[in-house]
Image (cartoon, rainbow, N blue to C red; front, top):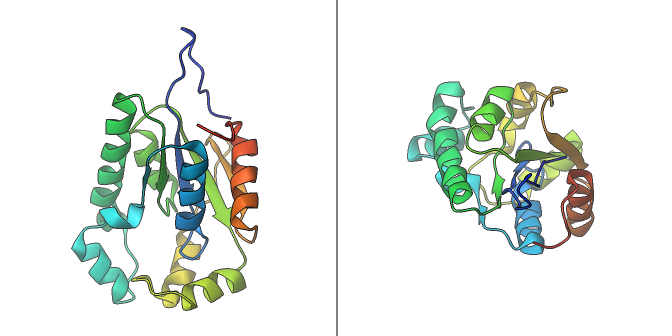
Amino acid sequence: MPDIGRTDGGVSPCHVVVMGVSGSGKSTVARALATRLDWPMAEGDDFHPPANIAKLSAGLPLDETDRRPWLERLADWTSTRHADGLSTVLTCSALTRHSRNVLRSAAEGTVFVHLVGTIGLLAARMSGRDHFMPPELLDSQLATLEPFEPDERGVVVDAALDVEAAVDCALRELGLPASG
């Protein structure tokens, strides 16, 4: 899937964005993926400006104007590590193609792992955790979600898989080694 080899024999950095709606397991899978690959990881939620957190906590969905500065901060994080020759793992909902394009613009070798689950699974996970994203926003996230288009580099992984199976599936589908 990603072209991680270069013609000069070196290896180009790869940047894996673990994406999906809230409750899909992005953070858990990304941490396990980063550990397995021994790559630095960033939790996308940590990059939200306070206004976004406040809006989401109030049960209001973000729009593209809200998302733009957040996505640019995530892209900057990836771009900096790419310039240092490092591969990365990042979590981000990346619900729209526009969002994925912003993240892709940060560095060549950016690919996506989309965790997909049933509404029942997602709602149960959201209800059972302490997070600023209330379960009431699940419907708006699902309505906003744009599936991959044929020219997008990414794979779909079942969010119902246990963590290790999800990581194994992502690595296999992306053609990445089991360790960094």
